[in-house]
Structure formats: C-alpha cells, structure tokens
Amino acid sequence: MGAKKKNVPPTTMSSLNKREKKAASTIATKLTDGASDEFEFGGSIGATLLMTGFPLLMWYMWIGATYYDGNLPYPESNQSWLEFGQHLCQLVYLGAYPTAKAWAIYWAFFIVEAAMYCYMPGVSNYGRPLRHEGGKKLPYYCSAYTSFYATLAIAAALHITGLFPLYTLIDDFGPIMTVAILSGFINSFIVYFQAIVRGRTHRLTGYPIYDFFMGAELNPRIGILDFKMFYEFETYGYVSPEVIFLAAAHFLYTNACAKAEQMIITSWDMYFEKLGFLLTFWNMAGVPFTYCHCALYLANHNPSEYRWNPFALTLLSAVYIFMYWMWDSANGQKNAFRHKEKGQLMKRNTFPQVPWQSIDNPKTIKTDAGDQILVDGWFAIIRKPNYVPDMFFSMAWGLITGFK
Image (cartoon, rainbow, N blue to C red; front, side, top):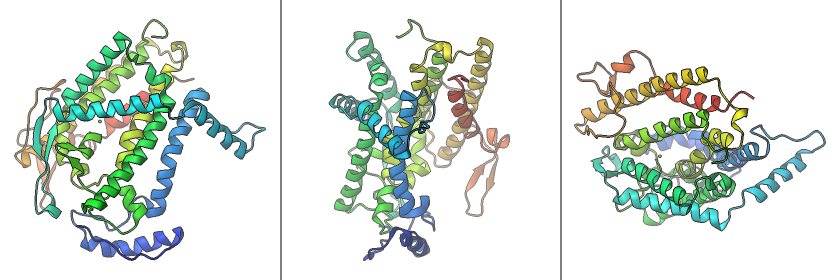
C-alpha cells in the first residue's frame, strides 16, 4: 500500500544515500501511519553496515568473553592486523562452528515456543486501527506469561533428569550463537520475499537493501501466530550470591515482559514498525546472545574473582528492587492510561502485582494533535520513569561481574 519508487537505475553506494534523502520528502507525502520524512539508520549504506556489523560484533564479543578473559581482543605487539583478523576467524571456526547439535537445540526451542504461543492459556485483545487496512483491528493472542513458566518447568525437568543439562547452553554457546545469527538472516530473507510474492508489502521505498533491513510487511502471521508478537521476549557445588542476584534480575525483567504482554499490542512497534532484518535478527540472535554476556562472564570465572562485599551487594539488591518497582509501576501507569482511553484495559492476575500500577482520573495535557499525554503518577515526578530504571538495570548487570 505504501508508495514504491520504480525503475531505479544502478547507482554507486555513495550516490545512493543522496538520492534516498532527495526522494524521502516525496515518499513521505504518500505514506500513511505517520511515516518519517527521512530514511533511518543512514539509508542503504547504514543498513548494509549494520547488517554486516551486527554479527561481527557478536562474534567479537564472544571471543573476548571466551578467549580473552572478558577483555577486548586486540592485536599482540608482534601481530599485524591481517594476522589478528585471521586469528579471530580461526577462533570462530574452532569454537563457534554451527554444529548439527546447535541447530537442533536452537530450532527445537523455537518450535516449542511457537506451539506454546498458539496453545497455552492466554487472553485475546485487539491492536490499534490500521489506516492502510481501512481501520481494521488485528486480533492478538497473548500467552507469553503461561508459556514463560511452562518453559521454566520444562527446562528444570530436562536438567534434573539429565536429558538436557542447562550448562549445555554455556558449553555450546558459540555454536548456538552462530546458528542464531544464520537463522536471523534466513528468516529475514523468508519474511521479505514472501511479502513480495503474496503482495503484502507496505511502505516500500524502492531501495531493496533498505527495505530488506526495515521490513516489507507490517504484520506477517500464520493463523493466530503473529511473528512480530512472537519475537517481541553445578561447577563449584554452590551458587554464588552474585549469580543469584543476576538470575533474579533477569527473571524479574523477563517475567515482567511476559506478564504484561497484552499491553504491547497497541504500541508503536506493533502498530507501525515492519518485520524486517532489524527486528528479526535482533530478536532471534542479537538480544539473547549479547544481553547475556554478564552471565557468560560469571559462568567462566571462579566466584573469588568477582565476589562482592555482602553489605554492598545487599545495598545494590535493595536499590534494584526499588528501581524494578519504579519501572514496573511506571510502565503499568502509562499502558493502563492508553488502554483506558480505548476502553480495552484488561486486568490479569499475574505475578508480581506491584503497587501503583494504574491511576484513576489521571492528570493529562492535551497536545496540538488532540492526543492526551499522561502527567500524573510517576510521570509527574520524573520525566522518563520507565527509562531511568532500564539504564540502572544495565549498569547493575555489569557491576555484578566485579571490578577486576
């Protein structure tokens, strides 16, 4: 439905960006759903660099965590940059080759999660009206909360019975990560070309590299399985307090995403952003295999190397709990406000239910466009109450690895 620039002659990469910027203003007048009048991420050149840089960065970080004791890899004094690059490639080949076992682990997990999406107990709701579909609202099935706990139960059972010890994920981290990288590319190609074949493209610019990166279809789905919704969440004989802290922190974050799944269906991501390489790759590979590097560091080091003072760790934990409450309740206030506006607020008995998650008769400011902005609750105290805790979480996950 979006405007498509046809018959684009061959051009160099340097001139492509200039032509994209020139075409942007023309394209923007024809697009719907509030499209920007500028190409994002530097157009085709930026998209190409990011698609190349994403996997290289992931392998580089993995090499640093695995072979350089968590430090940044760099050439030795007697090593040229070419020799250094060859050395890194050799490490990837030796330690991160995509084995058949890694393919089986990764895709078994995804197939099981897709089945849970469709068949686990959940709730249904509708997204925002789509202008290019004549105001149609797509239905969404939200089962992430029950699927999350079912996944934990299955993982525990597999570990206890010895069928699949969870430390396998650490032992085979490199191969599984490479499988995730390749799967991200493969799935992106499938999503892009099937949209073209089925005639379901939306807001194409006519620049294939950029369109592949940003996506061709808005809401690819099979039955009730909406793919964009689907992508959107023993060594020492004891568990160290730092590992417990990190596991609890990651549990709270993941659990919060699952328990409030029904709140994201009216978000900008679901309403506007298409499913392309950007969302597909980062949800299938980038997020799970980069956000876990603090856990990877703890798994690869003796607790004596990152041990915290007990009082300092207690203080960090207390601040973390407060920040979690701010993050959970602020997001709850914002989402409850938006859903109340549309008469779609749905209350679920999920864990944990923190205080101050919604506000009755909140104070608002009316914008020039006629929309209402929430200026009550946390949003009357701090400008970005949902982002400040997020930044603290990232800092805390890094701090827990110690100071060596």
